[in-house]
Amino acid sequence: MEFVLYELKDDYAIVTINRPAALNALNSNVLAELDQVFDSIDTDAVRAVILTGAGQKSFVAGADIGEMSSLSVAEGEAFGKRGNDLFRKIETFPVPVIAAVNGFALGGGNELAMSCDIRICSENAVFGQPEVGLGITPGFGGTQRLARIINPGKAKELIFTASNIKAPQALEIGLVNAVYPSEELMAAAEKMAAKIARNAPIAVRACKKAMNDGLQVGMDEAIVIEEKLFASCFETEDQREAMKAFLEKRKVEKFNNK
Ligand code: CO8
Image 1: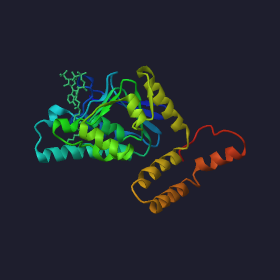
Image 2 (image 1 turned 90 degrees about the horizontal axis):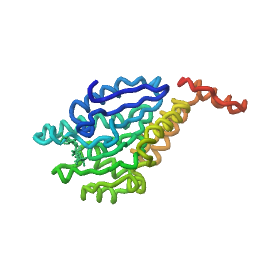
Image 3 (image 1 turned 135 degrees about the horizontal axis):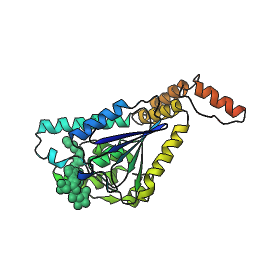
C-alpha cells in the first residue's frame, strides 16, 4: 500500500496514514486504502487498533481540497458517503480504536479522530472544522459527532466560526482524553492499547457495542442492550477462567478470546 501503513504488535495493531507531503490529507486513494486495511484486520487476533498520521506535524489535515474543488453535487454526495461509510466502519469496528493525534486534525482529520473510540494527542495538536471557510459543511460526520462528543453549543461555535483549537483546549472541552509531548504520544497510545488487550476480548468488544448501540436509543432500550451483551459473556472460557482465577486468588495469564 502506498498511503497507509499497517504494523502488528503482539495483540494490537498500528495503522498509520502515510501521505506526509500533503499533511496526510484524505484523497480517494487514502480512503480506499484505509478501508482495505480495516477490512483486512484479523479481529480474532487483534484486540485494539491505534490510528495515527505519519510524521510529527499532522494527524490528518482534512479531506483533499484539490480533489474536492471541482466536485459536482452528485460527486460531493458520493465523496461524503465514501468517507462516512469508512468512518462508520471504524466507529463500529469490533475492537477499540484509539486515535493518536500527532498534530493537525482539521476537517476530515478531526472527523476521523472522532470516529475512533478514544482520542489522545500531542502538545502540538490542532483541532478544527474549517469547512464553512471553504464553502462547505463538514461532510464526514463532523456536524453529528462533534455535537455528541462535546457540548452542542460549543460544537456549533467551533463549526460556525471555523475556529481552530489547540491541545489544552481540546482537553478542556473533552474532545481528547489526554495530551502528551510529541515524543511520548505513541508510547502512551501503545501502553493504553496493550492494557486494553490484556483484558477479556469478548467482554471489551461487548462493552464497546453496548456503549455505542446504547447511546443511539432511550434508556429503557439501552439497558436491555446491556443485559443481552452482559449475558453473552457467560459460558465463555475467559469468563469461567477469570472468575475461577479470582476465587483461587491468582491472576489470569492470558485471555484466549474464547
Ligand atoms: N488537502 C490537500 N492538500 C493539503 C491539505 C488538504 N486538506 N492540507 C495541507 N495540504 C498540503 C498543502 O497544499 C501543501 O502542499 P504543497 O507543499 O504541495 O503546497 C502541504 O500539504 C503542506 O501544507 P502547507 O504548506 O499549507 O503547511 P502549513 O504548515 O503552512 O499549514 C495547515 C498547515 C494550516 C494545516 C494548512 O495546510 C491548511 O490550512 N490545510 C487545510 C486544512 C483544511 O482546511 N482542512 C479541511 C479540509 S475540508 C474537509 O476536510 C472536509 C471533510 C468532509 C468532506 C466531505 C466532502 C463531500
